[in-house]
Length: 221
Image (cartoon, rainbow, N blue to C red):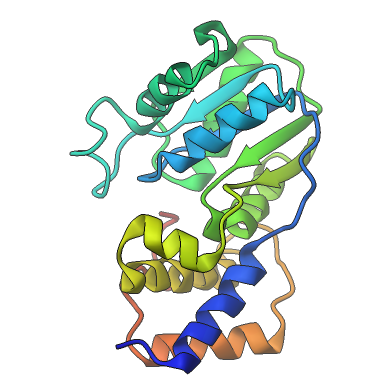
């Protein structure tokens, strides 16, 4: 059973991950591949609202997606967006990225290869990874403006969509850890972490929510 304190700390991390950017029209939308097809749904919705004339879906497969998305995360995202009415010609697929840094670098390379001018990017991720995605993108491609977006869901709604509260808390703790250690490893920009967020992270980690942590000397994953 998850305690009231653990839920409160999880909500703190969830709120901190939200960048609270107002979606606006950008040169391109980049949907970051993952296990969550909600990213494709959100990206498609933003396209239909006129927020971007072009979409790049980026992602290969991982240990959590190779069975569910055998053709690759980006390709499954493309198929979902087409089902939702996005024209196929408005979607580019980047099928090789295996982490957030590669999502950014490989998407940039694809757009440059196609000679597509980019001044701003609508960066679409899972709700609990907005800040991590933003920090990585700004580190690797600082010349463009980044606008973050994700499915407009509350924490309880997201837990219901995943169906496993412990998995969601593990993912939030893992995302928070990366915000704290990856700047030292050169993978993302440094972002100020308020004291109450650090304390919430440490309490959750101390209560065993460690399933998505990485060794602090590990490569970027």
